[in-house]
Length: 326
Image (cartoon, rainbow, N blue to C red; front, side, top):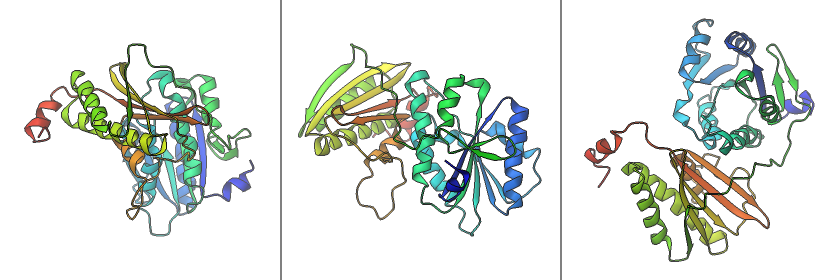
């Protein structure tokens, strides 16, 4: 893919492989300075500790804004709508040049493919958007070479610290996600059809409560599972199978049906305020800490939902005191 053809699309999306803090700062600042010299607005989405390292080398300038990415949590499915929200703030005609310094805490092999998929989806989501640019730094010392190579193929361009170049083997599609490992044999299993949604909700609520999930998060997980199960009944052959288990302290709920989902951006794009339907998987991504979707003809659809344990052990008591338990 040539640089000229990449420039014709809405998003100039480039990966920046770096080694060490000094190389990170030097290469990222070079990108920022090029953006500022062209009159672009610069939006840096990065963990708070990165802000100080870059601010120390930048003059005070309202053309550069910082965002803390910790609000995204652990779900890569929130990346595309986050950038939708962030670039929508600039309606003064300036081109946006973003820095996407987002690293989702990993569960190992369980979600590495989904984090890459989120990066690849940015190319689809903004293919017809007004022109903008996005630099994605990635620390080569923190990942094996094969993982860096796979992530690089999800970006049309690569930044070398001073200029961008096309990625020769950029993955134009379709994206082949890694297969999900099978649930443990001890997983609770429940089949459902029309009329069984109350039973599904009760089973999820009981599972969540038995595993100490706070009241609000129990409600959110129950709503998420109910939404996916409803889709199974409507579009997946009239019903499906639900499996429940715990893994690495997280609660995992998987729903399977015979339907096929063909839209790679399902549940990823921020819904229009005027849109009446099609919001279900969007809300599921907002409720859950990870949503893994695998769908193919002849294999059906699997939607695996993860809810992490609360980091604050006193959260449940405060929620009940605040009235969230009623």
